[in-house]
Length: 397
Image (cartoon, rainbow, N blue to C red; front, side, top):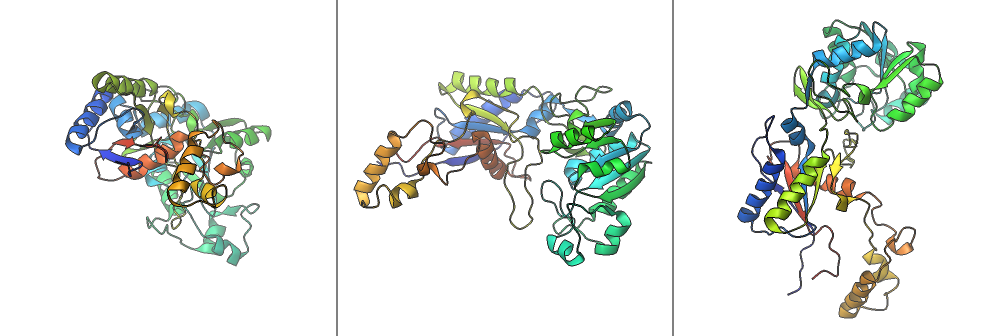
């Protein structure tokens, strides 16, 4: 019988993970138990994905605000710190900011506008147009921002982030000045000592600042790259990818994750004889058309994955073939012609018209987005995702 089901993504429930748990064994056992209860069978090239949060939790990769403060103090001393381009997030940045403020005497907080890097808006583009503000050139003081726009609360969270971040810094005993600008070099009018909090543009920001005379330049990816007073750490990303754990601590992005994915792959193969692919995933990479939020607040979608997930899809566009090469065919003849074309397609379709309109993204980014949407960010309790049929095409029986 012809197979009519394509890709299937299943969220898998798992025990609540605690520090010190054997994450490799838990993931493998959870998938095998789900296979028994869910009526499916693990196959070759299935994908098993586990969220970065439970990997980091098993590693005990946490840091307190005091440990963040100690690293900030060690790097900046008593200098006024320009903290630039943070995202507007209580979960992602607020606890980090509290630790930064505890390690500083004064902060000049420079926010990008009308939105942060991942699409959280302070104000709308329409409001900028109405007031005649040029976001590429105009630097706004807090007073000027209030004069122009008053109190503006985020439509989803109901938070006035300018006020929220200001009060948070002051509550840590740190003096604060707030400005809004989109050129990282604008901060040099206030201080030569800068902490870049942008995620995907951070290397450019650091380069421009150093070229223009900044004396001390770090990014969030340079804070807690090694253990401070017994803290967790991430040698590659520092505080990037961290999440709020408690009001006084953050969970860092997982470190040394390759042995985790390799270990899960090995255990599944030993117990089932099937060679699966495995990845750790964080935020997906997609944009909300209403809230305008681009989801990727982590430095990468996947910090570790097995070798079979390297690269990007090599696919042809079925509707292109149907409307062009085989426009004269229909029914079974059309199906057979397209199937034969797929079987003989080039191993690299980059630049060919027949692949136009397929998604030119890395496999890990595509699959990570699927996983993030499957597991959700709330109370589903499915930190593991099993994906079957992802590498199938129209010719698979």
